[in-house]
Image 1: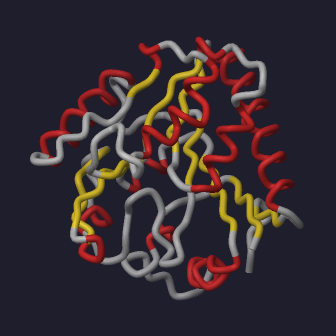
Image 2: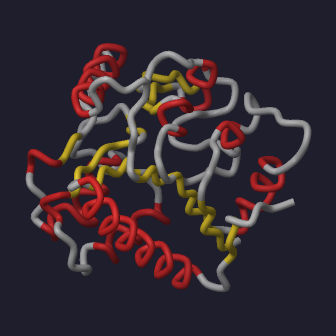
Length: 230
């Protein structure tokens, strides 16, 4: 059974428009209440279009801080870099203050050190917090029900102490960087943006019983909104 916060859209354009409107509404509320809007970003094609649409909106961008929920272990100018995607999709267009852009310090040869460095950065922005209190965490979901870079049967799934870790993903023969599940769930808002018929089976597994989060990692996340077109 789907929860009440699970909304399906007839078109991908409708999903993106709804997500963009809600993003702007939430940003304004957060800035009014706390003077800042702190968002953890997702990679992928569905969020990319959202970022492109947001680049055309008028918001007090100087009060928005950008973080990454996950990253590939590639140079920041690489075509697979989540940072590069976000930079091209929105950050360059809105002239985001460099001091508000908190990218992962990728270190291809020492991913563990890079993950620790980014966790230190996050902790400096959320002092005296058990986990970071994002205003919004944006998430996607893969065909295998992974989210962020929490892939099935990987070590990051059982990490409950760290905020951000390097995660070896066997099927890619590579490290990824990712927020841990507790660090995602600490967000005030946690939104999944999911598009494509190939995601239907993954969604069915996520909402199935019994829970198997080591197989279907998105089950670890307590989503506050689902924007879905499948």
